[in-house]
Image (cartoon, rainbow, N blue to C red; front, side, top):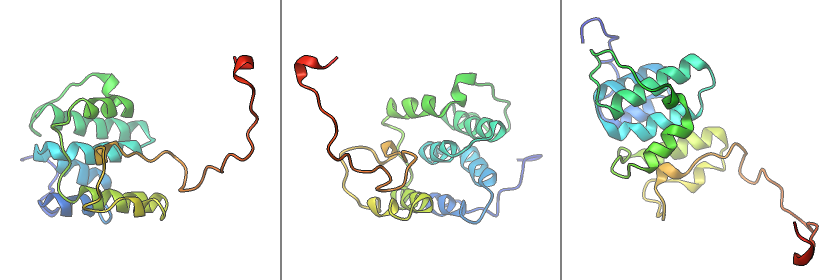
Length: 163
């Protein structure tokens, strides 16, 4: 990878590389994932994309995702559709590609990620948890666990009067 950023100090093991984001810059970890050609990293990069707010960071992350999706080698220039800069586009794409599975250790890693957002969220996910949906489909809703108050005595109207 002449002329490329040296990423050889980052782990090659997928589980270790996911957890490296706790100690390394996100850009380096995401770049190593994108340059690996390993599509199991797509769900991981999608989690990274979810929390990006700066336009340049969003473009970087979606370019990494597109590189993996289209299997573009790191030495090749890549052009992708600008609509792919949206997290929603990627969630729909992943939902339509059940063959793209996350790497081993993803559930435990996602638990730690969610624990950073809210310590109570991480308890819901752990390696080996039984689910009826794909772990990748579990998304943070933007509020802490129990952050939405209970609805007590809501107003009701008879069905005949409902609009």
